[in-house]
Amino acid sequence: MKNKLSEEQSQELLKVLEIRFEKNMNRHKDLDWNKVQEKLEANPEKLWSLDEMERTEGEPDVVGFDKKTNEYIFYDCSAESPKGRRSLCYDHEALEKRKENKPVGSAINMATEMGIEILNAEQYNELQKLGNFDAKTSSWIITPSDIRKLGGALFSDFRYNTVFVYHNGAESYYAARGFRGLLRV
Figure 1 (cartoon, helix red, strand yellow):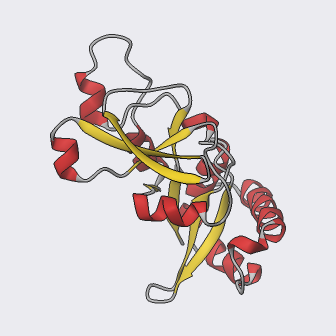
Figure 2: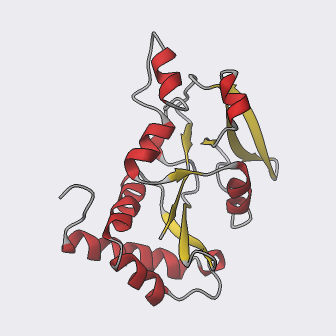
Figure 3: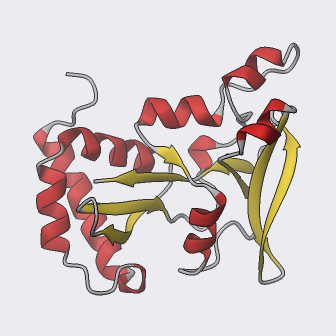
């Protein structure tokens, strides 16, 4: 079955996630790994998405719990934009407009295929409160439709102890720009 890990793969991923969880308690104070694991085991499709985040070097970790929806929130917590998700334009429309030197895909399409969302500016800023991320790379973030309609897209990075939000043409792509994902479980 597609989008489902084998029992062995699931257990291996859970071990990786538990080790990361315990090493980075500052990201999820007052949360209990056993409850997170219970939720993950009850949602195998979410475990598959986390495996995709891990496979593309995002190093997903729990960053919070939404009491309203009763969901744990995972973000990509790799120091730099995930290596397996770089050199992508922003979305499918941008990919289609590109006539020469097309990238392999788009950030929005890849996130959808992985079953995750791309961080927005607010979420990206929240992530930066947990450490310094993207000091050498940058990450596409969700772009408001009024900017996207004009052909632009937004990305962020962390330089000079500051989170910056920039703009670029949505069809642009760079070896040092990827995207960071979010998954609710």
